[in-house]
Length: 226
Image (cartoon, rainbow, N blue to C red; front, side, top):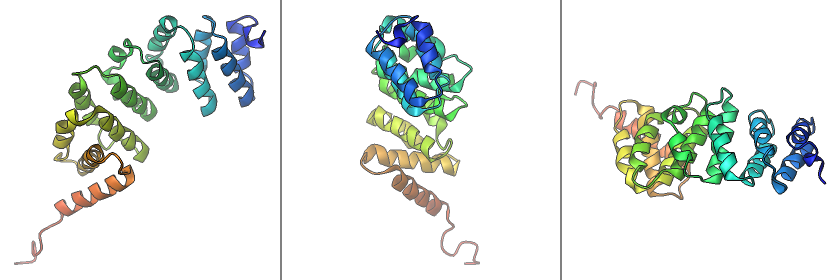
């Protein structure tokens, strides 16, 4: 019997506290291969503090192997965690499970979360789980986040709009005329990606910024006494 099973949750907790990432990875793998109700709490708790990406990914996989009737409720409660990584990992795991109970729990507060990683994960999860007919409502909230953060954050928002599809194009189109040039550029780039999904974000945003700059440039002869 695996050492993870010794003492159920307590044994797993000890294994996941190892200073060696490969040992933590193996413990998470074993917990997923041999699900046990007591593991759910331990796995969720570890998601909030685990520093290694590969281990976090394995923790998520392990949780998806457990009974959703238990796992989903615990993950939903984690969305209110004071620890940003706890919120983002819970959202990520819920997106993998795909349970219908997740959608109502993705609040405006999460979509506008002050932590970029939480917000990015909320955008991706919401875009994947939004019920038919609610896409525009979601897009209206997402449109308030145009030009937020660094390039990776902006890329994530654009991808969320691409996932929502053409039905939300009017929301993006409206943002292309916003007063803020950064918002306009991001919206223009997002529109390009929605229409040409194979185009890279970097190319789309560079072209969008060029368009915004040209539109804001003075006409030839303006202010020259002509």
